[in-house]
Length: 246
Image 1 (cartoon, rainbow, N blue to C red):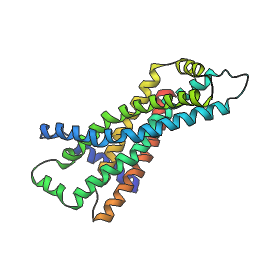
Image 2 (image 1 turned 90 degrees about the vertical axis):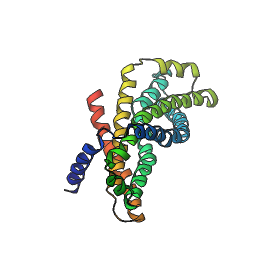
Image 3 (image 1 turned 60 degrees about the vertical axis):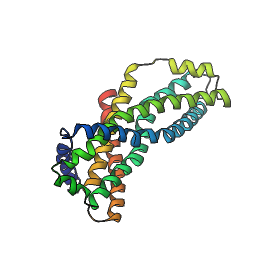
Image 4 (image 1 turned 90 degrees about the horizontal axis):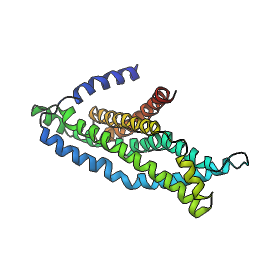
Protein backbone atom coordinates (compact mmCIF):
# COMPACT_ATOMS: atom_id res chain seq x y z
CA UNK A 1 0.00 0.00 0.00
CA UNK A 2 2.87 2.36 0.74
CA UNK A 3 4.15 1.84 -2.79
CA UNK A 4 0.75 2.73 -4.28
CA UNK A 5 0.52 5.75 -1.99
CA UNK A 6 3.98 6.88 -3.03
CA UNK A 7 3.12 6.48 -6.74
CA UNK A 8 -0.17 8.38 -6.32
CA UNK A 9 1.47 11.27 -4.49
CA UNK A 10 4.25 11.34 -7.05
CA UNK A 11 1.82 11.56 -9.99
CA UNK A 12 -0.14 14.38 -8.34
CA UNK A 13 3.10 16.18 -7.52
CA UNK A 14 4.24 15.95 -11.15
CA UNK A 15 1.01 17.69 -12.11
CA UNK A 16 2.23 20.68 -10.09
CA UNK A 17 5.79 20.47 -11.38
CA UNK A 18 4.95 20.46 -15.10
CA UNK A 19 3.22 23.81 -15.12
CA UNK A 20 4.38 26.90 -16.99
CA UNK A 21 6.79 28.89 -14.81
CA UNK A 22 5.53 32.32 -13.82
CA UNK A 23 9.00 33.84 -14.08
CA UNK A 24 10.56 32.72 -17.37
CA UNK A 25 13.66 34.85 -16.79
CA UNK A 26 14.35 33.02 -13.53
CA UNK A 27 13.68 29.68 -15.22
CA UNK A 28 16.22 30.35 -17.97
CA UNK A 29 18.83 31.53 -15.48
CA UNK A 30 18.24 28.57 -13.18
CA UNK A 31 18.32 26.15 -16.11
CA UNK A 32 21.82 27.25 -17.13
CA UNK A 33 22.95 26.97 -13.50
CA UNK A 34 21.54 23.46 -13.17
CA UNK A 35 23.17 22.33 -16.41
CA UNK A 36 26.53 23.30 -14.93
CA UNK A 37 25.84 21.88 -11.46
CA UNK A 38 24.26 18.61 -12.56
CA UNK A 39 26.03 17.99 -15.85
CA UNK A 40 29.39 19.67 -16.29
CA UNK A 41 30.54 18.67 -12.81
CA UNK A 42 29.83 15.01 -13.66
CA UNK A 43 32.00 14.96 -16.78
CA UNK A 44 35.26 13.92 -15.10
CA UNK A 45 33.92 10.97 -13.13
CA UNK A 46 31.86 9.76 -16.11
CA UNK A 47 34.99 9.95 -18.25
CA UNK A 48 37.08 7.94 -15.75
CA UNK A 49 34.42 5.25 -15.29
CA UNK A 50 33.78 4.90 -19.02
CA UNK A 51 37.42 4.76 -20.07
CA UNK A 52 38.42 2.04 -17.61
CA UNK A 53 35.22 0.03 -18.00
CA UNK A 54 35.61 0.05 -21.80
CA UNK A 55 39.16 -1.25 -21.39
CA UNK A 56 38.10 -3.97 -18.95
CA UNK A 57 35.11 -4.99 -21.08
CA UNK A 58 37.30 -5.45 -24.14
CA UNK A 59 39.83 -7.58 -22.25
CA UNK A 60 37.10 -9.75 -20.72
CA UNK A 61 35.32 -10.19 -24.06
CA UNK A 62 38.59 -11.23 -25.73
CA UNK A 63 39.25 -13.81 -23.00
CA UNK A 64 35.75 -15.27 -23.35
CA UNK A 65 35.93 -15.60 -27.14
CA UNK A 66 39.29 -17.31 -27.59
CA UNK A 67 38.26 -19.80 -30.24
CA UNK A 68 39.48 -20.45 -33.79
CA UNK A 69 35.84 -20.60 -34.84
CA UNK A 70 35.13 -17.02 -33.77
CA UNK A 71 36.71 -14.22 -35.86
CA UNK A 72 38.52 -11.65 -33.74
CA UNK A 73 36.57 -8.72 -35.21
CA UNK A 74 33.51 -9.96 -33.31
CA UNK A 75 35.16 -8.69 -30.10
CA UNK A 76 34.77 -5.10 -31.27
CA UNK A 77 31.20 -5.81 -32.34
CA UNK A 78 30.26 -7.33 -28.96
CA UNK A 79 31.91 -4.48 -27.04
CA UNK A 80 30.09 -1.87 -29.13
CA UNK A 81 26.70 -3.53 -28.67
CA UNK A 82 27.24 -3.98 -24.93
CA UNK A 83 28.29 -0.36 -24.47
CA UNK A 84 25.63 1.24 -26.66
CA UNK A 85 22.66 -0.90 -25.64
CA UNK A 86 23.26 -1.36 -21.94
CA UNK A 87 26.42 -0.18 -20.24
CA UNK A 88 26.47 3.54 -21.00
CA UNK A 89 22.71 4.31 -20.90
CA UNK A 90 21.94 2.12 -17.87
CA UNK A 91 25.07 1.85 -15.71
CA UNK A 92 26.02 5.51 -16.15
CA UNK A 93 22.41 6.50 -15.39
CA UNK A 94 22.55 4.44 -12.19
CA UNK A 95 25.71 6.30 -11.23
CA UNK A 96 24.01 9.61 -12.01
CA UNK A 97 21.05 8.54 -9.88
CA UNK A 98 23.46 8.41 -6.96
CA UNK A 99 25.31 11.62 -7.70
CA UNK A 100 22.61 13.85 -9.18
CA UNK A 101 19.70 12.28 -7.29
CA UNK A 102 21.23 12.76 -3.86
CA UNK A 103 22.25 16.31 -4.80
CA UNK A 104 18.70 17.26 -5.83
CA UNK A 105 17.02 15.58 -2.85
CA UNK A 106 19.35 17.10 -0.28
CA UNK A 107 19.04 20.59 -1.80
CA UNK A 108 15.24 20.52 -1.95
CA UNK A 109 14.99 18.78 1.41
CA UNK A 110 17.14 21.42 3.09
CA UNK A 111 14.97 24.17 1.62
CA UNK A 112 11.88 22.36 2.91
CA UNK A 113 13.04 21.93 6.51
CA UNK A 114 14.37 25.51 6.66
CA UNK A 115 10.97 26.78 5.46
CA UNK A 116 12.37 28.40 2.31
CA UNK A 117 9.75 26.56 0.26
CA UNK A 118 7.00 27.98 2.49
CA UNK A 119 8.39 31.45 1.80
CA UNK A 120 8.21 30.81 -1.96
CA UNK A 121 4.58 29.70 -1.63
CA UNK A 122 3.82 32.83 0.39
CA UNK A 123 5.06 34.90 -2.56
CA UNK A 124 2.34 33.30 -4.69
CA UNK A 125 4.67 31.06 -6.70
CA UNK A 126 4.29 27.38 -7.48
CA UNK A 127 7.28 26.13 -5.51
CA UNK A 128 7.24 22.67 -7.12
CA UNK A 129 7.55 24.06 -10.63
CA UNK A 130 9.78 26.93 -9.52
CA UNK A 131 12.41 24.67 -7.95
CA UNK A 132 12.18 21.27 -9.61
CA UNK A 133 11.22 21.89 -13.25
CA UNK A 134 14.61 23.52 -14.11
CA UNK A 135 16.37 20.46 -12.66
CA UNK A 136 14.25 18.04 -14.71
CA UNK A 137 14.82 19.98 -17.93
CA UNK A 138 18.55 20.30 -17.19
CA UNK A 139 18.90 16.55 -16.60
CA UNK A 140 16.94 15.82 -19.78
CA UNK A 141 19.43 17.92 -21.73
CA UNK A 142 22.64 16.93 -19.98
CA UNK A 143 22.25 13.19 -19.35
CA UNK A 144 22.00 12.18 -23.04
CA UNK A 145 25.11 14.25 -23.71
CA UNK A 146 26.95 12.53 -20.85
CA UNK A 147 25.91 9.11 -22.13
CA UNK A 148 27.05 9.94 -25.68
CA UNK A 149 30.37 11.05 -24.19
CA UNK A 150 30.48 7.80 -22.19
CA UNK A 151 29.88 5.66 -25.29
CA UNK A 152 32.76 7.32 -27.12
CA UNK A 153 35.17 6.92 -24.19
CA UNK A 154 34.18 3.28 -23.58
CA UNK A 155 34.94 2.41 -27.18
CA UNK A 156 38.15 4.43 -26.99
CA UNK A 157 39.09 2.51 -23.84
CA UNK A 158 38.62 -0.71 -25.80
CA UNK A 159 40.92 0.61 -28.50
CA UNK A 160 43.52 1.43 -25.83
CA UNK A 161 43.34 -2.17 -24.61
CA UNK A 162 44.09 -3.33 -28.14
CA UNK A 163 46.79 -0.78 -28.88
CA UNK A 164 48.74 -0.82 -25.61
CA UNK A 165 47.91 -4.22 -24.08
CA UNK A 166 47.90 -6.35 -27.19
CA UNK A 167 44.42 -7.75 -26.57
CA UNK A 168 43.89 -8.00 -30.35
CA UNK A 169 45.01 -6.05 -33.42
CA UNK A 170 43.48 -2.55 -33.30
CA UNK A 171 42.46 -2.81 -36.97
CA UNK A 172 40.31 -5.86 -36.24
CA UNK A 173 38.77 -4.13 -33.23
CA UNK A 174 37.84 -1.15 -35.42
CA UNK A 175 36.40 -3.50 -38.05
CA UNK A 176 34.16 -4.96 -35.34
CA UNK A 177 33.04 -1.50 -34.23
CA UNK A 178 31.94 -0.71 -37.77
CA UNK A 179 30.28 -4.06 -38.47
CA UNK A 180 26.47 -4.25 -38.66
CA UNK A 181 26.07 -0.75 -37.25
CA UNK A 182 22.46 0.45 -36.82
CA UNK A 183 21.48 4.05 -36.13
CA UNK A 184 18.44 2.59 -34.36
CA UNK A 185 20.68 1.37 -31.52
CA UNK A 186 21.92 4.91 -30.85
CA UNK A 187 18.36 6.26 -30.92
CA UNK A 188 17.32 3.54 -28.47
CA UNK A 189 20.17 4.42 -26.10
CA UNK A 190 19.39 8.15 -26.17
CA UNK A 191 15.63 7.68 -25.71
CA UNK A 192 16.31 5.40 -22.77
CA UNK A 193 18.69 7.93 -21.25
CA UNK A 194 16.15 10.74 -21.72
CA UNK A 195 13.50 8.74 -19.84
CA UNK A 196 15.99 7.85 -17.12
CA UNK A 197 16.91 11.53 -16.70
CA UNK A 198 13.28 12.47 -16.06
CA UNK A 199 12.88 9.57 -13.62
CA UNK A 200 16.01 10.44 -11.63
CA UNK A 201 15.37 14.18 -11.35
CA UNK A 202 11.63 13.99 -10.70
CA UNK A 203 11.74 11.25 -8.08
CA UNK A 204 14.68 12.89 -6.32
CA UNK A 205 12.90 16.25 -6.31
CA UNK A 206 9.74 14.61 -4.95
CA UNK A 207 11.61 12.84 -2.14
CA UNK A 208 13.31 16.09 -1.18
CA UNK A 209 10.07 18.07 -1.35
CA UNK A 210 8.19 15.77 1.02
CA UNK A 211 10.95 15.90 3.66
CA UNK A 212 9.78 16.83 7.15
CA UNK A 213 11.92 17.28 10.25
CA UNK A 214 15.55 18.30 10.38
CA UNK A 215 18.99 17.43 9.09
CA UNK A 216 18.57 13.70 9.83
CA UNK A 217 15.43 13.53 7.68
CA UNK A 218 17.25 15.32 4.84
CA UNK A 219 19.84 12.55 4.84
CA UNK A 220 17.11 9.90 4.83
CA UNK A 221 15.34 11.67 1.96
CA UNK A 222 18.58 11.71 -0.02
CA UNK A 223 19.04 7.97 0.49
CA UNK A 224 15.41 7.29 -0.37
CA UNK A 225 15.75 9.33 -3.55
CA UNK A 226 18.72 7.26 -4.74
CA UNK A 227 17.07 3.94 -3.90
CA UNK A 228 13.67 4.77 -5.40
CA UNK A 229 15.04 6.31 -8.57
CA UNK A 230 17.42 3.37 -9.08
CA UNK A 231 14.59 0.84 -8.71
CA UNK A 232 12.36 2.82 -11.08
CA UNK A 233 15.24 3.13 -13.53
CA UNK A 234 15.84 -0.65 -13.59
CA UNK A 235 12.11 -1.32 -14.00
CA UNK A 236 11.77 1.06 -16.94
CA UNK A 237 14.98 -0.35 -18.41
CA UNK A 238 13.20 -3.68 -18.82
CA UNK A 239 10.05 -2.01 -20.16
CA UNK A 240 11.90 0.11 -22.73
CA UNK A 241 14.08 -2.82 -23.81
CA UNK A 242 10.97 -4.91 -24.44
CA UNK A 243 9.30 -2.07 -26.36
CA UNK A 244 12.28 -1.21 -28.58
CA UNK A 245 14.07 -4.55 -28.93
CA UNK A 246 11.54 -7.20 -27.90
